[in-house]
Image (cartoon, rainbow, N blue to C red; front, side, top):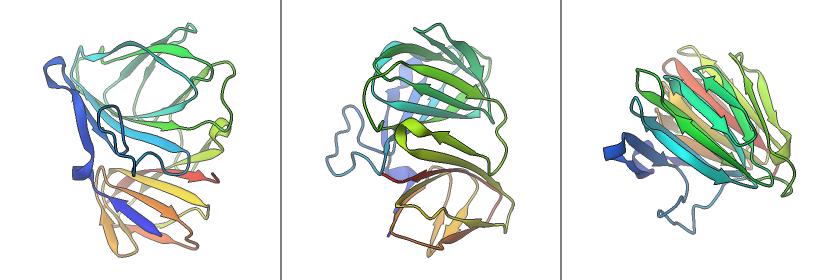
Length: 218
């Protein structure tokens, strides 16, 4: 089964006057949709756009694996465990909120910031929070989130290049840039596909594309 969700159908949020635009692929905050709460381990896939100087003040998280991919600009992160970093395009940021953590996310740079943030449900609650940034992850290098039983594949495809979709009970594909032909559908920026009970599925980049692909067993 392939369930394609279009960019234009995402729930719009944020605070325009504060320089924040948000686009939510799943039920989120005031946008409650009981039929769109999660897919596999994925609870949220938010595209955030922050103007220079804008950001999210300190706020709490718990029992969530949070993975962030910067599309353009630079993300400043600080958290209650003492971590502080700048996250740039090509970096994978992972905050395991575990039993509880507070953090700040801001655009302290001179240019607009766009990032995709994905929340995953943990296999078990509690524990100690942890944080890491993998700099400049290479194409096809999987990033494991063992706390959620999931693998993230970052794929950068040239026009005409074929993609072998992972064989897994649940696969979530998010298009960051470009276009991807998948079965009978063509996906563009911000579009996603929720794939279950499929095997030997392939796609083709109809234009140079950057994709975030979650491979999940739960």
